[in-house]
Length: 207
Length: 207
DNA sequence: CCCCTTCTGGTACATTCGTGCCATTCGGTG
DNA sequence: CACCGAATGGCACGAATGTACCAGAAGGGG
Image (cartoon, rainbow over all chains, first blue to last red):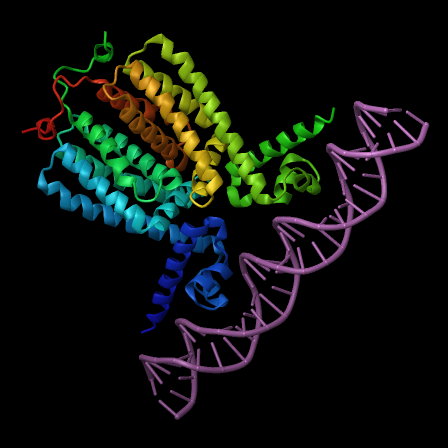
């Protein structure tokens, strides 16, 4: 009983997410959300105590969904014992198709990161979110035989974040994979290379 | 003659930048900017045709300043023929101190990237900005003897972007270097490692 | 059946917003 | 000196905003 409300609440969150992706976080007003969700104005104030809460909850939703999605992806890929290049191809394919399918969600996630700069609650959430990313990347790094999976995971997460932002902010539509795959191949293969000797700073430099 | 105006214009842009860093892009209103800059309300409309122009110009300013700063940094470092670890240390030090000195500017730059998602003019600017980054990174990659400087530059730029965002959105204040330096060391040393043989996908995987 | 909580949808209001207007001052030029 | 464009600053207007309020529909439990 009384579960209709939850559906409407979710519907409003979806609409807000679409709005953030299309017109930015500052386009999120009660009226704009209400129109996007096709609900009366009062609905948005009924389900959310304030505009800030609405925005916050929407960003949390996006972050959690994305984390689940990634967990599923790594869960599928990890048991296959792929090499670095296959990992790169799989990850690049997944990310670029997802970027094109739901750019709004990913834009929203970056908005989340920026909002977190100013909001303690969100900062905490971003930390958990990144921790999840690190765990997943670490799993992947272990799978390709990284010699320092924790450190490499950090590098990989940072690189993926940067590539995604690049695609969103300056990419032509749908050439994402062409850019991401070679970069990821290169990154993964180089990180996966075993150090035959302990790395000595100057030794890696060409004479 | 009549150069006072330019100063005031610049003053307003600075204030706007501070505002973006402190309270986000949607906190940029004529009134808020005027107060932050200690100028009357009409000044912001006198120097900028609209709120959007004000925001846009501010972001362009930040992007160009940052590019110049990076060019200076690479210009200093490149002739020293450093190894990957020294590069990592220098870059990590520079970025983390700068992140702490002027977080507002870097937050603003990410806001720029997000706005570019929706604004054609900004998207073009972001492209130029990233092209500059790529050129600089490529220079650095060449300096450490990368076997594919263009590709590696892409990876490096993405990783740096990701690390910066991580620091801004979830980092404790001022432990940036402790996080960034090891990651960069790892990335640079692995990228700098020569491939003795042509990289063959499966060969890099541990048996 | 009635009641009470949940939910709906319409409206009102104070505040804040972007922007246009205009009288005034400044500072260099003729 | 007079002049004139550049710059200033105060103000007002219409539009949009967040949110409170309220009258009622819905629908399951007594």
